[in-house]
Image (cartoon, rainbow, N blue to C red; front, side):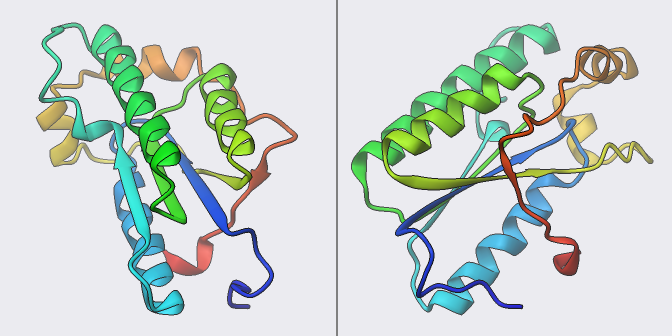
Length: 163
């Protein structure tokens, strides 16, 4: 069933969360393409934590991840505040409920409906992103060991038909 653009909220935020290098950017790009095609408008903004990894100088992945998350949140807040984009896709690791609540609460203050897409932790063969980020198995295991579930009250988005 196609999304009902006539009855949905004026502003939508899609939070795409998952471990590094599990194809979050691919699914976010598909969502963006569908939204542009179906709405016949280019009011979609995609923000990714990976946009900041080359700008941050910390060598430790854990520190770099948190610094990049902070930069992502600054950009997200600015995008919401400028009110130019009606459909915002935020791609990140979002390993804690606090980080998810930051997006949910900021979205609510701007009357935007927020949906969470949790990408499965299918840790197959390392891809180019793992190499680009210089991720080690220990880095991934550290994130996974402290991973928190999506809050029960968060509305989840099922995009299985896009994969």
